Image 1: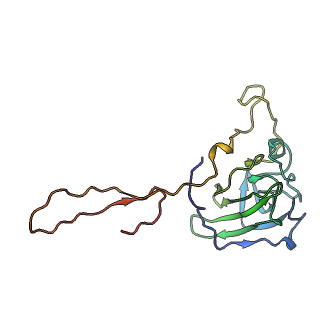
Image 2 (image 1 turned 90 degrees about the horizontal axis):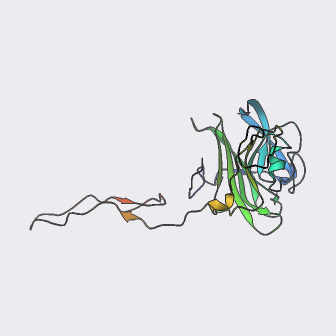
Image 3 (image 1 turned 90 degrees about the vertical axis):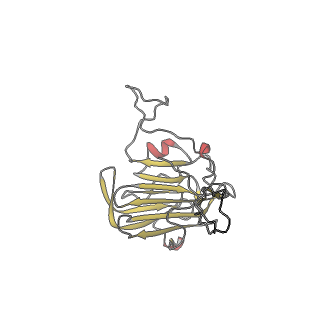
Length: 231
């Protein structure tokens, strides 16, 4: 499911940035880090104690050191080759040019999860930067959040089991050629931000009163952006 939001659910503080000098493979351009998972995560029926965090906008689970290059927005690269992968915004990114890739472990009861934050990371082919988070919960949920990042084209967002999938030309499932995924055009979702809207009163005051008696009523107001209101 998709939900339009105004802020990252976890926020942007408390993260630790990965160090380029400590990369497990490659460089800031087409490289990444190995992240140990304090609690194993089960993905497509396989339990993993580690994953790899790629500079190019995805995390993947495998013993190999490479997860499919920069994907280059290719569905074939995501679904047909490579490793089991969660793509937050799989394209050619380079935090060595701008931005950071960061990690945080959340231990709140019922919300335990690993969070990977791509903070204002540079798209290598232009000056655009993108920000998004990938959250993998101990209970198996996965959440990908984008804030203020106009979808870069081409790019890939979504899950792949790492099992080579047939890529049919038809956009619909058929008996002879079942489609292994459902495409979604990210450009239709806008830049992920919500324009600030003015709060409004939700209560109606009494319009009549009695001379000599105090007049009051309970004020109720709402804010479309869920901002805190002070009356």
